[in-house]
Length: 319
Image (cartoon, rainbow, N blue to C red; front, side, top):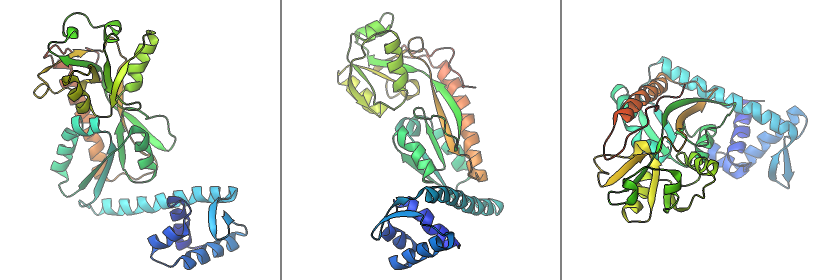
């Protein structure tokens, strides 16, 4: 057994057990890949993959167990490289952040600006995707850290920590009937609702609030982007339910923002990273900035009172 054979097993997982793609990634001919795989199976004494002719269909039960160990070995190789670079104080690495549009636009500018000030040589890549795909990017080693609100469920391979807590608001034109009077779920339900697509930015909490009140939620437009929702509110499509932090007083002064903290449960944005990954010092510094910026954001969020928007007094960091 040698490292080349372990690398072949690792790449087979990444490529869906495609021998041709593995050969391309290793810059060798396919016959060499097949030969190494057969030599490994001969050494172990049993096939590791089910086959149809020369095509691999998937791992055998033993192959599954061995591939789990190969994943650990590959993670160890990554950690060794990261540890060595960190020991040498390498300031020319990369930080891959997987997140949603809302977090990228409204939360990350402050921590990224502070990070850039301390580590100007580190390249930053922001991968915007759906919350459901962010965790996959971590497991595929295409992201170092993931930040979002939805889909951050328990995962034994991840460290998941709360970042900051926020509430939804409703935004309407100044002339809209909801701009005056008490806001209730019953009043909201009499108008077409514009809000987030399922799986984005606390949509589940919006649905939960209406379901608990046994009120039909009539969503006539759903989008992943707060700015898209605000655009169609301005066009008169309905009332928008968006994340409180995505209301920008200077830009959105034509809209009235009304607090929904008393009607919709709070949402918590979280960050996650692989438990077995070695975090370079610059990644640890970025995590510190996430938490510091979270505290500042919540403080700012709690004092902002303009255009009718009065955030709930209980907005704070989740423990």
